[in-house]
Image 1: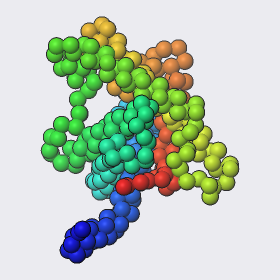
Image 2: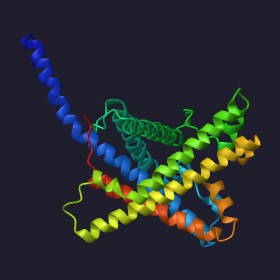
Image 3: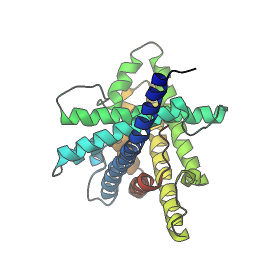
Image 4: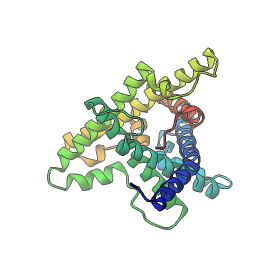
Length: 284
């Protein structure tokens, strides 16, 4: 039986957690807003490239989009806020994976979902570190190198070519999963949309479908180039987002495809803004 002191400590801890939870949820929502801004920037520049207003090589990766934020008025303040939001989002994703906050269960499918959330947490944690790198002179190892650089380093190791191929296959699989989500449209189940009109709910779902389809296409394209790099044992074949879109732009009807991807990335960014407001967020 616990002592009065232990009960008092437990009660105080529970009260502290209850006070902190709303702030944690707000920080996670800020992470969704930051994601939305990043994808809108990338999508807008891709659309400009398709319209011949800009160039495909001007389309940044997420780190480059953060650099665009930094160059705006009050950029340091905005990027500091963005870094905090991304860090909170990353911690939340990792907590979902480790502590099963959404009660996914232990089936194979649910374990894969938890692994995907862990990967998302690590990716956005790296992006938060990249934001800190841009704000400071620190080198935090946030993966600022180009895909061809880390691919070359990995290929120089034993079984490195197979590792690159496996990573490429994994990225393609993530892209396929996003395309699957776009087709099924079940992503809106995690949103509290009952208060909205049917027309608005339809628009939200449409933005989500378009956004997940574009994101899936980008992942599949980048993953395919990694597989090609491994097959040809040529690190130069590995491409990031801008290089992949430039290669896509060079084929027949390529500018149309790049424009479609750009519009889709903007739609995904807008969908992140919706998630920031209506997403159910369980912080434990």
